Image (cartoon, rainbow, N blue to C red; front, side, top):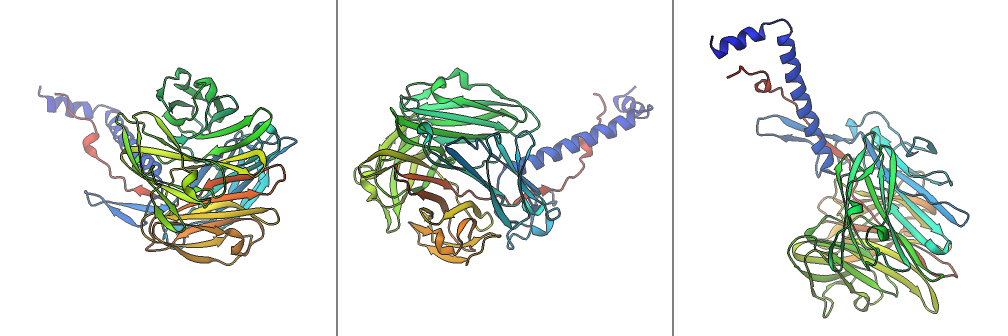
Length: 516
């Protein structure tokens, strides 16, 4: 009997045809799910509409229907206050996908273990709430029309000597790959890595460290298990003591997590500041570190070359007056696998600036801002990192800007390549006058957010206009305090507004075949 005849008879046995159909549907279903997952993981989509495939089918671009972000540690004690802020700008009118959002939707803050905080928004709007001592890690979650562009952040003011300062961070969306540059593990300095899993499945994570002398062998950082709905906190000095400056690469083997790093510094009993490290862009040959703060104190550029080749990096500083090369530091060499640390303060003239890096091999970078005041030993620190640009289809949001007596918020806007045209708008329920401006190519402009006309605390949508060049944005908050400076900075990240939904076609060739 021939093979084709055996196959024909097998397919006519009772139940065999049904099994074949089920197998075909399973294969098609798995393929569709994997394709959709890859599209979702790819981040913001630059345009909306239909995208043609080689087989003539199309993929439709629709508004994101659900978005999550994790606020890692809303610290609260007798001397520490943390405010959680949430902004739901909704789909931009120019995106063409707002009509695809499922219903009006809501945005809310939920404890990692399910307890709701008293904040529920409908786009476009924003709000904030004080954390309580038992709040724990918080998940910002948007659904329907409140999911596109969802942004959240936390801002902590502490008088406790071990973590005195003003510290803020964007609440990060779950993912599989994160980079941070900064912190250390020496006397008086402690860094913590927060791994938070808001998903219903467990995750396994590797934390890889680099230092001034190269990649660090830290076996305890490999294979960290993070249970579903749980958080693991790892001390950098437990992984690798005695390191003056780190680059931290968090890579997820399985599952998805949100990662964050916090740095705390003291000198004996004198506070030297605390802040979160902003997420850094993954290694690339060109990077821009926006939002290096004005004022006196160290401004330390920290560049990591994680590959197997030394990096030759051209350094340019981007200020309000334009772009220039720092004399004697216009080119630096970063040995393979190491973190290079140099002080840029002598070249900044006290003004805010961005750092433009061109390298012959992929690198990523950060800047430590050490803010001092005349005659005062108390300091504060803030961090900047290689940034993610905003585009017209992926605007960003400042979840909270504070203005008023003794407190100021400044938006630092950098345009390294081509003039950037941007519109700044206050989100309801606050009111203000929208402002449009142009950032000249090769410059960084400081914008006092009080000029938008709102008072107190409010959220701001930062939307590049059509024809704009890449725009990088950082929000700085400073607060007066007789004990010493209080300052923090936080990147404005591009929002995730759309996702591609592929058209799924059945492929019958994946069904049962006749045995050979």
